[in-house]
Image (cartoon, rainbow over all chains, first blue to last red; front, side, top):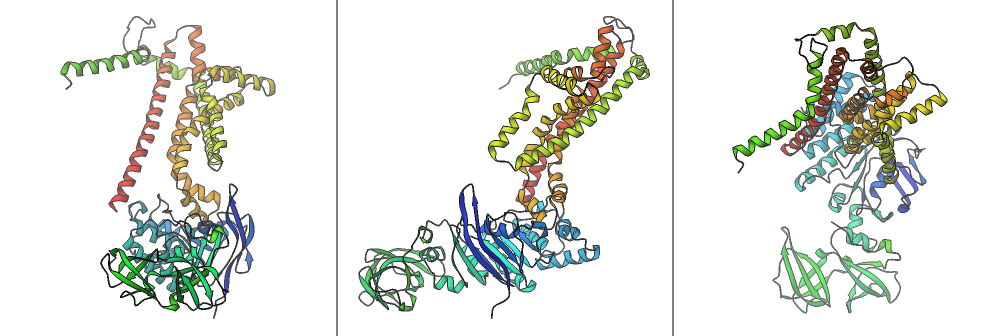
Length: 358
Length: 271
């Protein structure tokens, strides 16, 4: 069951000063979807959002909104609202006037505006803040006012450009829940831009992983995490062991000189591949009982689990386990065939697991 | 440690410098209240020169001309200068700095050169009169407006402007409601500076004025050449005081700014 298509970005290309930022990007956004554009800085995610908002014109391609071409429509004529990355509240107006700004332009009645302000402030848990100056609010409060100011206009789509980037961890987590709640209560489409993979996985219906102006992978958070399509996605989403391997035949892959069982087929025989294994999927056994033996070389306590490095077969395996082993302990390594992810080697630089700042 | 004597010397020195700087104007002001026409004799205190000044039709005409000319020139210069700043912010770095240097030329150029140049232009194409004076005074004022508005405009938050567009504002409405209040202190001090510079200009006005038109400064010049009339001391004193007041206001506006920004920063930390 798929919702109606609301926005279609059609083969969008954009360069700045001769540098290609978006390359033939094609993306469909459905009604009531929480879609996140995720990627490292410079991947083109913010540019995509600004093209949607109407602040940048694409060099090539079209923006279709509800069946209509809005590529050249200015921002003030688009039925979508943006929550900006930097605090964009109007500093010389109080909270009330900030929220009423769009409604007054639309020529709504005073009673309607008053009602809406009350409703919006309640929605973002800031009742009674009407007369405050935005300059005296905390970062989280300012961002919530910015959200209130956008949603009172009842846009079909809310665009959010790293709205939580400037907040501290605890506040960011609270705001994530708040955004999910808002999206469910309002029933509008959210397009969210972030470089934070946790944020993307927590809130989204659909995650679009971008790098160097290309969409690397698009799917549900579970798909993206469990079935990364290439090394870039695997590396960017969560921690991964990415190891060179050779697909010997269907369901058999050789890693670090040892043959592992896996479930993938159709790669051909003796084909070089990338093998991805999530650190929580590496099982530590007694020496000799696993597929290969190694020695614990590092251990740190992370709260929920221990994070260990195990040197085996000349490779440092990243391992997460609730059971910790002291440095120097000999262990056996075993991986469930279902947890071994086989990927084709990248055909271009764009798909390589490039240095990702975090 | 600073000894008492040292401190006294410091103060004395500063006082002496200021005395030297302002002694001439002080003498002018004193003379404007002197009942005797002789500059070296004190004939008692009087307001007579101010009274007869107010009754002098020729002087009052010059004052009116000055005010109309100065006010319109400052107003037009403020509008043009502010528009120029907005244009410049969307330009690329190189063209922006090129235009910035060009706009500084009237400020650094010798007034007499600017004056003669504008005179030649108008004599050739339009004739001298109120229009040529107005054009000259606008030229004089625009760089000061740009100098005051540009830094303010660079400080403004671009996303606030974009947010206004996003909420349905047309670019003009967004500018009026969001950007203008933000840069208003710069616009205001630009206007006042342009006003002051224009009010107090003699050289450029002298070359571009039409026959029979006088501003306060060209009027004083003419009168003083004919012979000393203490009315002119009174007029000069008023001119000096008016400009002093304007500069004080400009200073207040510019000093209030950093304080407001500080208060804003403090508010953020406190919250």
